[in-house]
Length: 91
Image 1 (tube, one colour):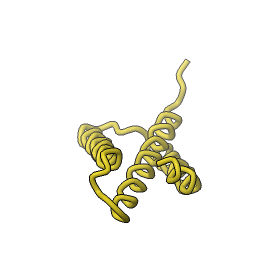
Image 2 (tube, rainbow, N blue to C red; image 1 turned 60 degrees about the vertical axis):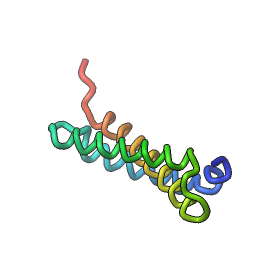
Image 3 (cartoon, rainbow, N blue to C red; image 1 turned 180 degrees about the horizontal axis):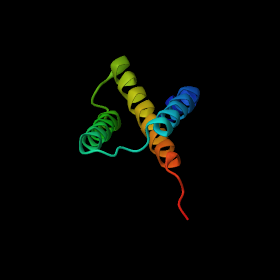
Image 4 (cartoon, rainbow, N blue to C red; image 1 turned 45 degrees about the horizontal axis):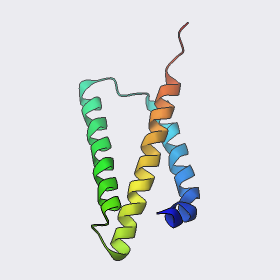
C-alpha cells in the first residue's frame, strides 16, 4: 500500500482537488435523498477499502481495487472539505 501511495500521489492530489471543487460547487447534501446517496457512497468507499485491506482480490484486479479505494476516499474527503468551505461563516 505504501508503494501505491508513492506511485499515485499525483492522482490522489488531483482526486482531492476535483472533489474539493465539486464539493464547493454543490455544497453539502441538504435533502433526504441527497443524504441517503452520500451515505451510500461512503458505505461503498468503506466496503471497497475493506476488500482492499483484506486482500480478497489477488493480482492486477486487486491493484485496481486498491487504487479505486484510495482515489474514491481522496475524492470524498475533498468533497467534504469543499462542501464545508462553501457554507458562509456566520458570526
